[in-house]
Image (tube, rainbow, N blue to C red; front, top):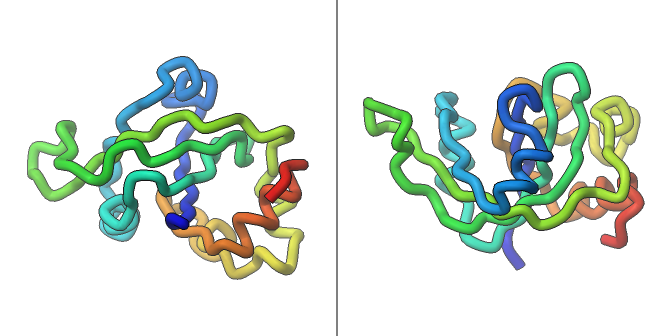
Length: 138
């Protein structure tokens, strides 16, 4: 079984609707070193929650890593990487940040503790709990 992640995007910049329409898309433009290290750790087949940041602040879908880290073509310095994400499925119902913060089983997540990080790991127990909150079968 692969690893689990959460990737954040502003819906005005790149929305779930666009991800679903494209099917597979390049995740680039990450310039935080910790988030970039998380991108480098991803392997093909890993799953990630697709999180809308900004006003809505909710997990809306699941994507799968389709291509592991490679040089980010938008980075002229050559220091950062991109990954390709393939649409897996929308969630039965979105899971709002407020619901995640209110759940004691999820208080340890980087999403709660370090909310500005755009790419973060999610442990298996938290993954399953968030799926349950979304009305999905873990």
